[in-house]
Length: 355
Image (cartoon, rainbow, N blue to C red):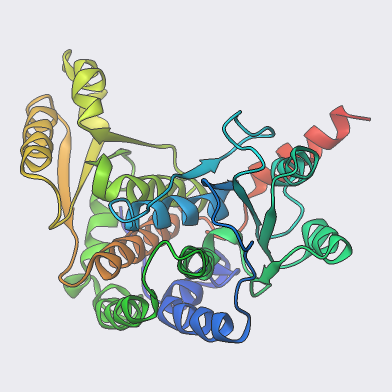
């Protein structure tokens, strides 16, 4: 599909999403500075588990933090996207309520439920009702910078979550790894940003290859599962595109059968296989065989591999890659990536249904 992917964009980016993605390295640095000024206050006794109540962009930051420290966390970290806690969240746990706006109804429900259960609470928000309740009840609440779509503040949330895990004594100080990540994003962003022409910009070239097609994101569950989810939701919200994600090895026990009957539908699908240096050999083999099978059934297959560096820098770079890709697909679809009219309408109708 034709269409200019270089600025100026006019109405196609009235919300300034390009600048927000370009500014992700600075977002990391500002979050580190904010953390130094505003340390977490955590309970004196170590919790049996950390239960994070969140939705959307706030919840994916928790998924990314859990994936980052998957082999280092001494106790469970549970991400709950719902109105109620599972039975394992007791007074021995610590509940983190994370809502960018502070008004997410599911997160507020979990906040009040934790209070009734006697679960110690901390919060992460820009304000709203969650911030007000924390001030009223003297609950530790770390602030996020306001004025952004929640999905565009993912690095602010992610940095804050890693700082909380450090404050609990569960992980080493993440500041050095975040410095490396910010430097990696600044370096890689030069080739991915809107100012880089199509001929030298892999994200723009891939966006053109994906335009008009259904997108399936496949990755290894252990290393890049959260990154695959982030990419899928960015395609949903930025590009206004239905997308799908699944993880190996699980998809090789069910979803792969869905590719059995080749046909016209498969020829309209593009598979994005995300790869990382830490993928276990058996996972790498499964991804390769899955991609080969999908290609044989008529799908286009593209691979995105993480860059060099430490685990955090590699994960952050893939998140940045996906953010740019979803932005360019939004431009090719002729839509402003920032507004989320469907979510706004759904919230309005949900509120009206309660009257």
